[in-house]
Image (cartoon, rainbow, N blue to C red; front, side, top):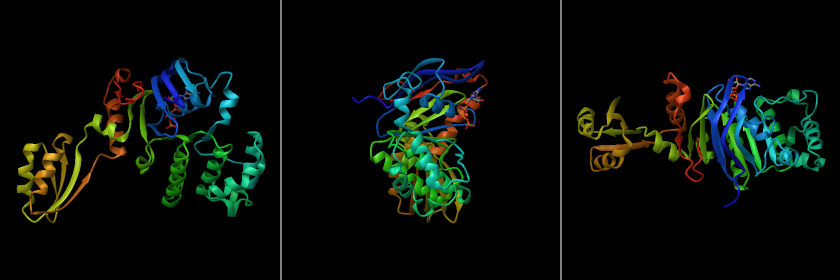
Length: 325
Ligand SMILES: Nc1ncnc2c1ncn2[C@@H]1O[C@H](COP(=O)(O)OP(=O)(O)OP(=O)(O)O)[C@@H](O)[C@H]1O
């Protein structure tokens, strides 16, 4: 098996008396995209800083490309990492070209990369304009170009789509997909990113410094066991259809004009589907599995409802490594 790109085993990080991370375990493989999620103060940025080698763990073991990111290999490792910080800031008086040229020199990479990179992120037309004239989306693109200098094999992107309009967000995810297809590993750090689930292989949900759950979206759905939503339209009285589904544990809500919204327990999915498909009076049916947002809310609530957060158990889904949480 190839070596994981990131391997965190029971990593803890304290700032004085404050425990920012508590026994967090996580692995990321080559070409995988991980969504790292959690509330304000959950420990996302602390995890990023540990991976970047900017701070050291208080306990546990952390390896990036097989090395201690704060150890002797730190400088070499940084050349393999790309980092887009939250609210990225640049020198406003410089042009996009000059900014990127500066960062390329810092990374000791020839300036020949600057123009192709700016073109790749869609800033070719504006590369000689000053950054102060750039929109939020253009600044994010410049930030991404900066993170891409040197063709890193691991990209750490902190709240990358905040403030971007839908088209800019779509373009951004297009670039993430392209990176993944080239075997680059990506950590997308966020509270929750609407629409992110199609672009990530796994999600890791932090809460109060602990790993609440990690795994593929399907694995998270399995553990969370949230009901599926089915929306249907029927030509018969919706109430009588709702009554007939109650024995399956289905909770039905009338949605007007012969429409029903059903919350269906996962275990009853097939039985309910068979029942509905066999009913000629059911004329339309849509099925919606739990979204990443609802999964996030579910796992996040497990700590918010708890008086003693330190006792939060973790939903361990990282089957391959068996090290989640
Ligand atoms: N240098 C520091 N000194 C003291 N406490 C810190 C330091 N850095 C982070 N913390 C604390 O550690 C905890 C985790 O912070 P972190 O920045 O990792 O959270 P986050 O998940 O990135 O939050 P946000 O979504 O608000 O950016 C918070 O309680 C924070 O106040």
